[in-house]
Image (tube, rainbow over all chains, first blue to last red; front, side):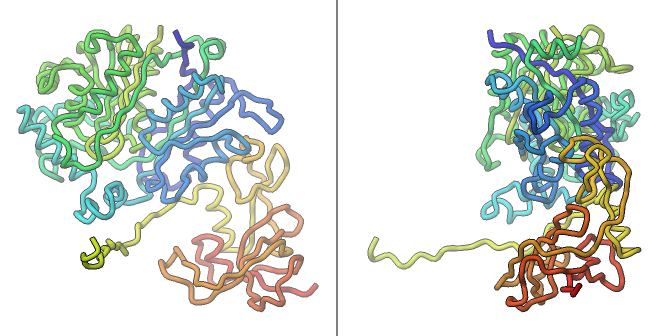
Length: 387
Length: 160
């Protein structure tokens, strides 16, 4: 069996929009400083003296408005004269890259940092640029419109309802009330969601996440080192990613084959055969409320078309058999790109027993999920354990 | 194939700029305010290595530690280290248009602070450009506060 890799320290900012008082680097520093302190480690200097051997950053050039978006934060992540790589996808993939770096034998300890200041740019214009410029972009699509097409197809094919989507928004924004870093927690009802402004049919204002700024840092270490640095290492037990296809017309948007594949591979690594039974908590990308249900099905946590019934039955609420998005999810406010590591940050807190009011008693196996692109074009799945 | 007409290749063009509003943040905002309001350059001296951190930053990239709060005024005079000039118009991202007036670019070693800064030179005569030439910032009369290149027009050759 391969040597294990553990997450030894985690820090995340409070998520909020319009952080005009900090630039991207200063936002990143808000999580770098505490994570280094928590692990009790130092950056490596020019003489080779120090602990962090490699830095993986995760940001997206269009969101940052600069090519090589890692440049703006390098002074803050210890990048000077250091090994540095940037991932430009959901940040769950940055953890995947850091994990692989350690398993490769090159490094014992890697710092992972992600940030996005969505407030700096225009969401629709930036997302539109993800579509190829000669075929799809002239249509004026953004991820939001694409998501609405997917939600509608999901409803039509599997009979999932707007009320069930709204229940996800109610649950997650309610969970956010118990999370001090949540941006927009709310005590709301299904009626509130359905009466909120219809933005792109069938997605209401409260079915989608707010614009958000934030950063997260984590330190990953090889097993032997991880055990020395903390008495609560959280182990990455399985991880995989998989890409769908660019053209939305090539897909049945009610299906998520790439997610099925990514999950199957991750579960195989982790030795998980019955995910719904073996996983204690799941953090799932919920940029739009319907996605939590659709991705639950792709992740094999229930059968196709069954996720709506699980939300009806309260299975996924805190206190249910499989709590989903105890953090409050993206619906309570996480920036794109940062979102995947936010899922892991919550998983780590839950598996350490440090999730406060929203703690799931005895949680020992967590699932974290992240997506990149329109309608879950790229999917990443990670399983974690405290044992 | 030989009898087919010549191909017409289509290009899809976009001209709409992408708007951004970047936060300069705590340290750069201080520098930009000083430029706008007092027509002077300021930065922090790192509390660990005692070097000037340029541009001013909360973290010293060399030490990988907080640079501290020791703000000092730095000279707006210096010596040209190297220079170049363009023979085509440069794009001004502030206004989204090409610049009508071209100036040579130079790296300037600001006096007494080990700060090397790329800026524009007023002198356009190629024969008068040389490494080591002494220059000083020419400040815009009415500061704008949108960054150094808003408030400093260029560096002017000085005799000393």
